[in-house]
Image (cartoon, rainbow, N blue to C red):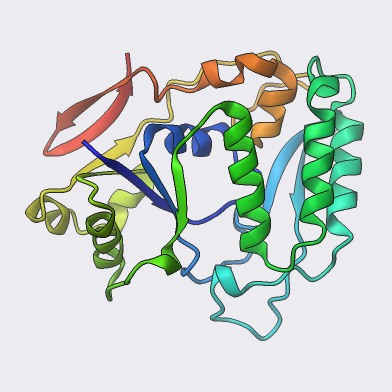
Length: 246
């Protein structure tokens, strides 16, 4: 089966985001969606000696209530240097910081020249996927013909990709019209995020929901071994498929 993942771009997202990318054959960045404030599009969390800290990309949203993610511009190019300085300070003593320092420093230097948030997110997502050995094809929703309606848009992209399986997060069950997928022969799989194991973080207590960079700096080449998508099987319950690790 050909599996598609369609979701909004996030800034340096957590391991579960990359785990879903690895599980898919096609990954579509759904940046035709409206930009939402205080969300994951332009920010994420890292571990620090004093607790969790948000890293936020400043964006131009004043008076632009309905602008799409792909239309959202970065408002201050100095954000990249500030983020990298914070990351360097907080992870300097992490076991694998030295090994990946140049990789991430280069990413932040390149990101500082980009005008749009979607460009920044795509850069980090594509390069980190490459670092982790994830070869899933990436594209933007703007490359496809989009129907009206939330579910219809997702289903339409799946059809244009030739995908017969759509993988999504548990919360999608609250808004998706499942019968439209089933009637079109596209199986919907809800990804199970409950199977992740802990690892040694340099700033306790342990927290799963932080940026992937924490896992990379702390676990190095073992980072991908913490993903569950390579081990899951698809179980059907009440007509819905659930990806469970074995």
